[in-house]
Image (cartoon, rainbow, N blue to C red; front, side, top):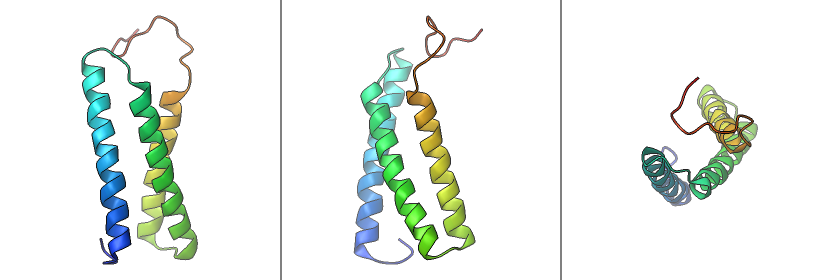
Length: 98
């Protein structure tokens, strides 16, 4: 939005809207006690696309803002990757603690 280019705005609105929809779907499933692997995978893919876009922007123009955006995007991708890894502790349900 800061650049004012229509393609950048479309990229943000489309991917951001899809990510928001998948996040709401995943949250509703979690509250029902169910898992939604399809929504989690979709979130991971969209976050990876956004991370690659931020990384390419960082390579072209290194500023504090692009560095922070790339760092946050990378952390989100790492979170979704961790979330999608198989769970080593069988029998645990979402929201349970030991």
